[in-house]
Amino acid sequence: MASPQSPVSTAPVRGLLYLHGFNSANCSPKARLMQRAAEQFGLPCVMPDIPPEPIAGQAAVDTAYHELCVQLALDPADPVCDDAIMVIGSSMGGFLATWLVAREAARLDGPAGPQQSVLRQGPRSVLINPAVRPTRLVSAWLGSTHANPYTGVTFTVTEDFGPGLTALEAGPVTPQRTLVLLATADETLDVNDAARLYQECRLVITPGGDHGFAQLAEYLPAIMAHGGYRLAPDVAASLHVAPI
Image (cartoon, rainbow, N blue to C red; front, side, top):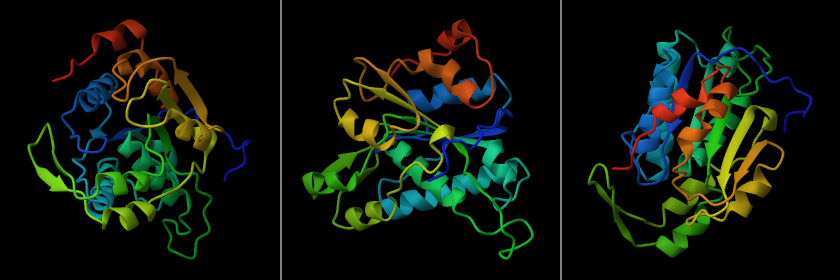
């Protein structure tokens, strides 16, 4: 884990990567809200559709990250990426965001090749009611079939979900660069799990609320400030997207 004394960059990020939750899509209200916030500052916002299967989901996130790097004319091996990109993840997207940041922080290569020693911290991140050890849910959902409310695509939870999710488990490697938003009345996940795992991060615990974090527009100023931008509260409120 990085030292708590490691500095937090104040340089504005140049692009956002938004990762939606389990069985959601890039057209969900939260995804569209983040896209609207990014548009206020002319920032590219890559929002992949993430398949529910862990291996396919990991691949989709990896492809999206590289797509954003291309848009920003950056090499993923360049430490500049750490301050150029902010990853925002909701629920399972928060779980995947934690994995992605940890992977990037662990890079040993650099623009000049694998022999170059480079200090990495990984991108800044914002996690909204992030899932913690979702492998535990597999046994309860094993064999169940789900339909995506946005795309209509159906899938069945199989035993392969377990090992796939376990392989992606990670903790916050740069707590001071991680903003975590939690709602105490989350009806899907135990808020205490996330509060413990991310206790050293910039943690905001909101009384009440729900798993969908319907009050997200109210927190857009804090989210964009984490990325180095000032978004007025009245502007943020005007960006609100009603649930479908």
